[in-house]
Length: 461
RNA sequence: GGCUGGAUAGCAAAGAGGCUAUGCAGCGGAUUGCAAAUCCGUCUACCCCGGUUCGAAUCCGGGUCCAGCCUCCA
Image 1 (tube, rainbow, N blue to C red):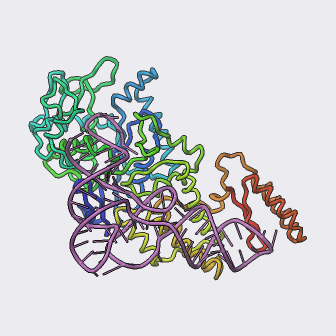
Image 2 (cartoon, rainbow, N blue to C red):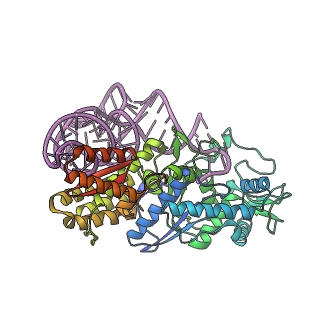
Image 3 (cartoon, protein in one colour):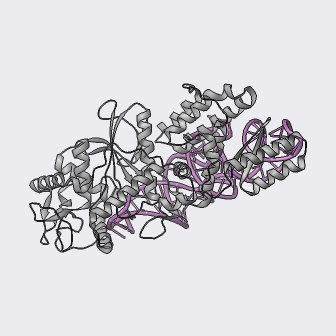
């Protein structure tokens, strides 16, 4: 039984889809005006695992992750660069897809863009105005009337009065209430715009997600996800818009992932303490980054450090070592290890515990390998690989992983093999000084040798 | 100020009213020509103060500290 922590109720709940066997999942994606950073990588990977696991549990999953391709920052950046905003967004959408592929993130079922859903957005705003939930302000902006939605605050646990009393609330003369938020902004000079009943302009941020999610997945769908910082106000506003418009309950389960931190502070653009995915991939393999992201529960904060990434490498080394030298085989079915893995994942996608079960399994594989030989360990090894595959890791050939040359400046494989042959001869001659000399020489070059009976295998540190 | 979360061994990170988490690192042993890898064993824990209980890291109450949101943010 899959349990999901629902941010709407602040507790774990047994997951029950609206339609048996089917899951509709919507995740707030990126605003594409720059390269993705590690925080973005976390959402991508966290929900990729949700997607993979739901499918492994037999659900037919429709996974929608939107792209915000029109907003203030995009316009500002495009103007700075002196380029069309669509040229800018296209570039960063491509970059994002490249990063995703590197991290082993499966493409979502649909990836709608705000600019391709303007009619749906306008239709939704019209309905909101008709139903008395929105109004045109003096500035020409269309605003959502928060006071018209009594349940406002139910997701984030806030009271409207407390919010009004907050110090950080912006006062805007054209709004009836400082809590009201914009649905449609009138065009300013040098800005892209679309025609609407309220004049040329563009959509506000929150309305696009309401429009795209309900259009594609229906008024009421199963799971809505995103970063924790979107819970308020973005997701609160989405609920207000969607439920006021459709009269139906919006998403059943809300999932929010925790932040990546640097020195115990949130990684973010405004704090300027972020690493892009690309930055990190220069020094670490993408699979290590993915493992790192899965090494803590998705709701917990995760501190970025080189120590953590090194730890991820070490963990993967151990798992790949267990698979090394095993012949291809069918995976064992429903052993206790598989149960443990599934139980962990059923518990609100507890990836650290799932990983722990993989290490338990690896130990058994190693033991079988040592005591009864590679054939005997093969099917459990295949199970290890299969389960790890649900997390999107451990799918490389073990030698490929262990011998990978991350920065591309290591000794080439042929030279290493030649040295190994030389050492095997020295060993046969019982010339230990020479054999150890070769091993030390390779060690200095970052190559570690392992003697397996008469054979010698190698890996890079 | 309001609202969320969190505090677990040297580090990272799960769990959880009585049963070895796990990984890295350390220590001892097995294996090895010596190593490496692997296996076995093992040392470091549950922020503080009360309470409930036969028993509390785990539940309850009160502190302290940390992070996040309340402005764009994954």
